[in-house]
Image (cartoon, rainbow, N blue to C red; front, side, top):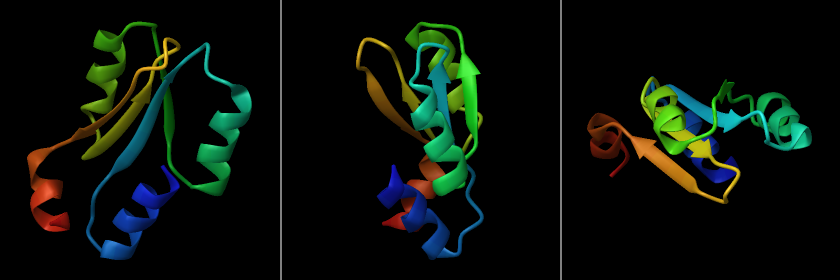
Length: 83
């Protein structure tokens, strides 16, 4: 997450990045992502369908599910600019 957020910031592109977690997420990870990485965090109901829906609101969305699912959601335009 740190590498990805720095890559996007350093690119100079105007891309939104965000993290979506459930209420079961470790509170320390939420604080770290918000304060150290300066990436917004949203909370969703459990279930990938809820996480994915909120992650899709960002150009680059990352979501974590309690069952250890980790997924990066990219809109196609950021991939074009980052490649």
